Length: 479
Ligand code: ADP
Ligand code: MG
Image 1 (tube, helix red, strand yellow):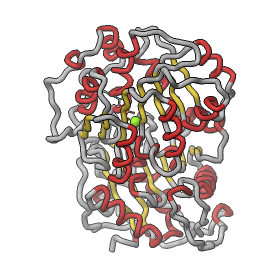
Image 2 (image 1 turned 30 degrees about the vertical axis):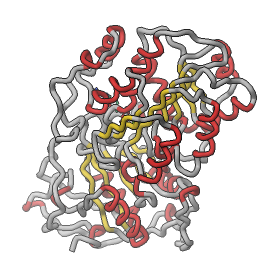
Image 3 (image 1 turned 180 degrees about the vertical axis):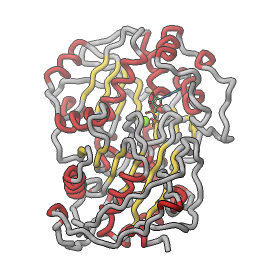
């Protein structure tokens, strides 16, 4: 059974009376939902599903990991159950910002639509077009696409959008920001004017919400949480750290905070690459994902991560949004993201579907402005990580040892000289900006034996005094 924590609705507790059966969905669909193991709808599902079935436009805002996908996929399946497919003319369209996310939504359609005769096509870049064109020729009920590939096929005359009267824009604020907006405007101009349009996101900056007006017709706005509020199942900390000590700090936490599975985000793809290499050299089972990697490798790496072959994924913001991977225990922001809404999305890769998660954000001098913006956006101070917040057991008094001061020679891994460059913060340059390699001072990782046990249900705690032995790297911000 889904814990109530999924999701703190408006009042902070859930409406236990609401059942999937009360939402107006068909019996076949209810069976598929039951087979998926869901016992009750999440608040966004409870509110959005009836609205979609009533054919109204909507803006749906709810925290990361609270089931926004099913809140459009489920009612869409019932809406599309009646009606006929036609060649080249998809009946509905779902737009996603990344290929991985489009593929994930397609999986959702397969899961929930197994009792229905609906055809789906996935139009994403980086894969051969042949199959996609063939599927379109045969006629599809649901098209799931990234804007680029869709435009491509449209311009080649392989697709007609005039029969597509249901449009979903997932991760809507991202889709309507500078990079994507021309494509979205173009695509919408090819869709019928009288259509149903649904927008979903966990974040929605006011200027972008204004933009949504041109795509929507008298929408119902459903916000089960304030936009950009973070999921309450995530315990988040910031760690003040010197830039050159970020790697040591990361390694230390990876070894000492009972990390099961982690995603480590960095602002630059060069950092992603170098960090992954360094972690691998240190014996961690890590992999990497960013926009420079070809699609086949991106898929393979993600699969290895999902299968548990690797338990650490170093990523750029291409992996920040939407990805739903079970059991991610930790998210690390190796850099504080330049755009505060990315923070909400990044840490939202953990704490999904009622599970608990931990998120650490490294704050070096360079990150000071960014972290201030994050706190402004989320409306909450992120506590500074303190000793009592550690998920590892602390040393028993008898075993207490002073931390060794000896520094090991740096391995060849981290020879890069720091070459400060002016970092570009323009939105259209993210998420893959130029790298600024950090210089590292290698140290032995100091481990602590421990006696305190981590409790799964530990609530987020305010930062506390660090009153025991302190690992050397934590010198900053803990004294
Ligand atoms: P969001 O888009 O809001 O970030 P997702 O749609 O990706 O979240 O869903 C997050 C996770 O929650 C998925 O693994 C999904 O299977 C699960 N989930 C969705 N709805 C329910 C529900 N009603 N009960 C239990 N789990 C659910
Ligand atoms: Mg989502």
